[in-house]
Image 1: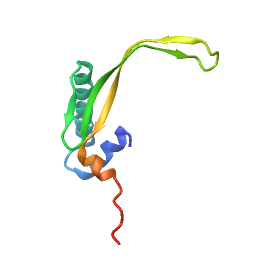
Image 2: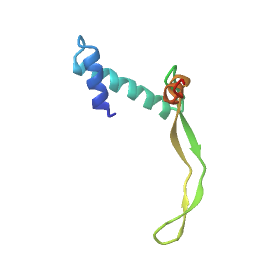
Image 3: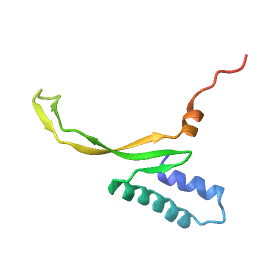
Image 4: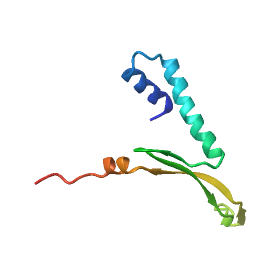
Length: 97
């Protein structure tokens, strides 16, 4: 699902709000999450999941074309951990016999 698809779905569910209003809200939520992560703050949305920044250590890698070793610098990467409710929805339950 893309952001524009998300906006369309929300627009259909809440016809009293305009598409521009929903787009403003969705962008506001995403920008707030990005800003918090940029500041090193974890973001937890109950029932959905949590976003964190993980530190990856520097390491030695290899260029697959030349085989030459290269130094890969340390970096920060975003990480998402799904919440319990999402995990339970994704687990297929066996059919009753």
